[in-house]
Amino acid sequence: MRDTLVLNASFEPLSTVTLNRAVVLVLQDKAVVEQSHPELRVRGASVDLPMPRVIRLCRYVRVPFRRHAVWSRRGVLVRDQHRCAYCGKRATTVDHVVPKSHGGGDTWLNTVASCAEDNHRKADRTPDEAGMPLLRQPFVPSATDAMLFGLGASQREALPDWLAPSPGPVRAA
Image (tube, rainbow, N blue to C red):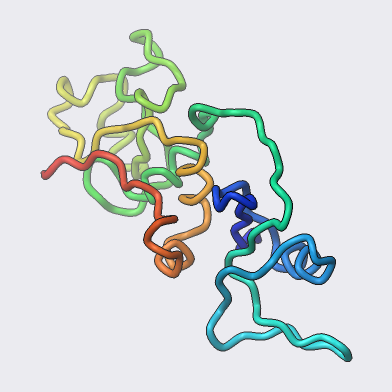
């Protein structure tokens, strides 16, 4: 499980790593702990450090610019927080707004998280044809937003406000 956020030396989010990897980076003086779990500590014979939640690299790492995240089924579910775009219940499938048979593709703007019942009920139709309006419009997350969404709700809430991902456009039902 990747539960530690890694920031570049310039404080921009880079990736998430396992807790073990984060501790190793700190112990090797390659990173410093920026935010830790309040009551948890890593203890050893000669070490006692706070359990890292966010670490920052000591040296700047140049990364190629990525305008947006690569589309994936898991990415859609995470972006929509595993909530159905039609009814708001727990989503387990991905639905194409414009069905593939009508020319729709696997893109961020054409896919939404959906519960199996609504996905089956909508079938091979658009939301307008099925009479099923979207509660939330699909959007293209930035690469940083996609990584932060992947941390999980409880971990995102514990992050500083300046690191929180944008929630994306929401439309009232």
